[in-house]
Amino acid sequence: MNKKEDNEKGGVKGWIDGDETAHYTLRRISALRSTLLVPPLHRVPLRLGNVIEIFGPSPSAKTQILIQVAINCVLPKEWNGVRYGGFDHSVLFLDLDCRFDISRLSQMLTHRIMEGNAIGDCDKTLYDLCMQRFLYARCSNSFEFLQTLKSLHYRLKREKDHGVSVQLLLIDSIGAFHWVDRASMFLSLKEHNRKKLFLQSVSEAVVQDIKKLLQVHPMLVIATKSVIFGNTYSTASEEVNGCSRNVTRSPQHTQYREYMPSVWQSFVTHRILLRRSDDQPVISNSENSSWYVLEWLLPRIGLPDKIIVKDNGVFVDS
Image 1 (tube, helix red, strand yellow):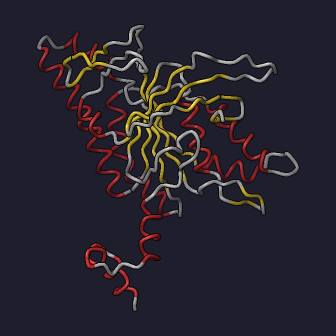
Image 2 (cartoon, one colour):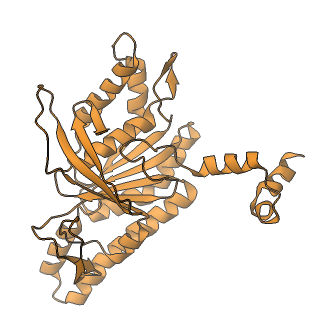
């Protein structure tokens, strides 16, 4: 069977006709599935094109998780006979909070390289390669964010032409400009409907630009979002298209306010709640450690994970 016939047999028609081989099925699924299934994002199968929202109060280690996922992505599978278990891809990090700490990325990457190195040293050549794979852009308002999204196609194409494959888009934090936009529009526009229209149109433009980008450059998207938690458990106020409504929550969930427009909410395929652990143990050594609870809400998984953030990374408490 030649290549053309193989493609036809393994395509959609071949699958419908029942002619797709098991070998081709596994190869096709492997190409669609993202390999970024690493703790603490290892509970749910993910694939390129999925959009994950990690939300929680500030601070709750959301950015730390993004950094850990980024490091797993930029590290190679193997380097000079040492297995690092990375994925040999580049990462695009969009910093909307303008508070990204590059020294934290450097610290965690150095720890990972030294752990894999038998002599305990940091391989500078490997370190430089990984840092080159970390692509960074900072946006200070919604208009810069939209301009950056529109220009990403050319940047990713240029990287691809140089043999660099970007399969991970990280956005920290997707709601950074929401309240600023609301305040500025409230001061400049007296008509409430026009204010809502502006906020909705910005979110629609963001979603549409990301969709267009994913059609040409399939990536896994992970976006963080800060929320304000309350002290009660019975109801939570949810805002859709600028309109607030009460949503009943179970006792396991803390009250929080959903403020992103529905166009973004419906775009998200997976949602994770991250909050500080109430029963943080006492650490006897001098290492800085913080404990958090990570819970999958979409799809819903009954058992949350307790994670610990240390100087050398983020770990699931076993």
